[in-house]
Length: 493
Image (tube, rainbow, N blue to C red; front, side, top):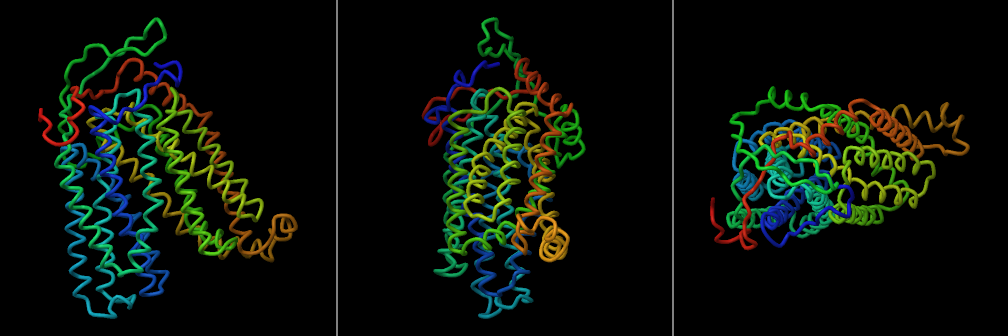
């Protein structure tokens, strides 16, 4: 096991399998941007057409619920099929659906989309969101491809690049979608989506993903404290399990000490994080204009890119489970403290810290799963984690709005809360939202501290260390490929 972060090798995306990973990462980045552009664009366009907040809320609900419902199935597709073909099939499915949406858009009579009760509008919305959801197998496949293509001592850095791509997607998506909707409604959005997806399919056809063999690698602990080399390994057959295999996936998750607790912890974080999803825009717009708020979030997305690049540069060290919890503790602390003052400055600083830390947390979770879960099951476990974790936030988002409006706002306007703390905390709707943020941040911090002291944390850390030292989880080894094997006429094995 490495003794210091400085001894950890850096990524080299110019040659071999790491070059292949770079091509797949770029492909995922472009397709993610176009799919999320469709999502943002249809939200903007529907509001402009109907002026219905209900309709735009329904779009967000469809996305989150569908993501949670399909994660396990998509993970099974990733595990049971060639991952490059899954990525291509995902793009083709999205493209086919968008083509149908384009036909519907062109054939629908003028004015039909302006009626929130129009069947054409809701068929159009559901089809578009189905196309966006069809891109999710790519997000599940990508961390498994990190396991496949990146040497183990560099996977944390590769996971940091994945976080950078996520931040970049957030940064440009809202801008692109706003410009396209303003210029031509959904027409230009769909035409661009079809063009980008077609290019993606052609590009992936030229990327040679090496064949793999799943082996049991055993690393002997070296006397000099350096990184041990893997001992000769024997080939193991890839598990031939068809279908969703929810029971087998759950058994695998349960059998890794502490893994259920890790997923449950992330689920709880998303559950209480739903409060920020539901109330942050209302709070921010109580402090600044809508133009400033939009520019502010663009800048914060750039901070997330910086965080991902820092992970790629520095790595995560030898204890990613501990780092994951410490990062969460810091993030919840700043989100608990910033609402104490009604200031856009404290809000901006806190959100910048939060956005910079999130790539570390996400990369740490991915790195742990890549280490403790056998490769041939990683798609299902990543899909399972996505389904469980994504299912939590919308529950809170749907509950916290009415709770804040009908309970906390009166409490902080002319109720007991206003009498007790209003003299220094403030009163009214904005300060009621701030109180929800303080309580939410405190709950998150307490949950993180409990997790740090829990036996499940120690068990998961021990499981990670054990597989790092002994290779007890099945590891993936790829045949060495020359630097020019990433694209073009690469030999197929």
